[in-house]
Length: 426
Image 1: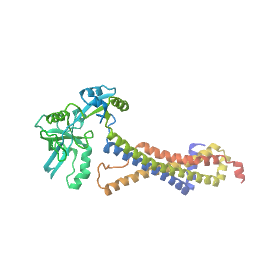
Image 2: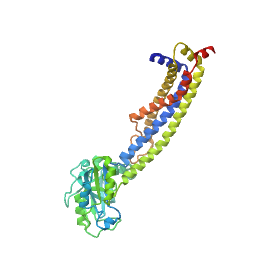
Image 3: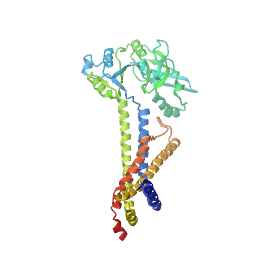
Image 4: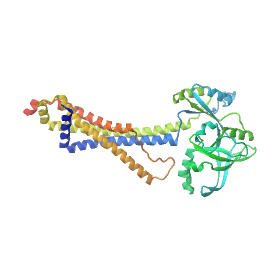
């Protein structure tokens, strides 16, 4: 049977039983639409978690000294210059960036104009010195380098900190919302070796100013990053350890090298700070598990739709027994009859899959519009909670086709086995 004839017969059959075809397509659309909706939701929320809530660079590895180790007691396990040199020589390491906390507390007392408002507040400040190369791509004002005593210290704050400020802190205190461009160049006073709550070292208090030169995902969330040379100088001035580092960031040449590097670092008696990575993985796993459970429910709906299609086609084959017998009598082969039934089911499945996929996307747009009006602003609230890459569209269509095709297999075999002589003889 030619393709044009097959398609003509398919259209005539579906048009004649339009109600049954639409009901079967509706079942497929519900299952496919639910699956596409939940998969899109999982992909969208997962992307927000990975890129905004817990941004993790796959090439970075954070090395820290061990909390307690025999190596540390015997002079090993320290992050000194010699250890950093050994880390930089590890196979697969492209670059090494050192970190050193300012080992005395710091506090800021701000009383003045703040972007059109007036604020008076005091905060504890955690200052972490880092090699300039780690953050230089995020610096937008001046240079990220130590300018010496008496000069403002360049600082880089966490991008996520600005998000939290804009969505929670600013609305609660009626303060202006800020952007990265507005914050660039903002200067505030900081007193090192002073604290509102913690004990100080007893050394001199070092009053200075910190000038924000940029925002970065690599800056500490609970503090501000300053040049490493500045942190060393401040530790020396306050009589603190200025020779060992509190962390080292390894940049791998290839993310695939990370597991091997982790093993080598542990063999050196050092530890890994993978808190952000583990939190990102745990949050991502929770999203995947929830999405998988809902997707399984959607697949079950598709299976029920396939059973419904099989039932409808069995009834159709019985009702069309004489029609199929005539087709066989005028020269149609068993394969032609089977192809006719499978084509009818495929059209129903593709139509249902397309309607379900498009419906899921339209519902997601409605949900995004509703959430923008109903949900209050909160940190890391995305513009959309959904993501529909092209494989999701193709998967929706394929699932609809697969469900209908699977449901039509047995009815098509029964139709192909029709004996034209017996059928026409009654």
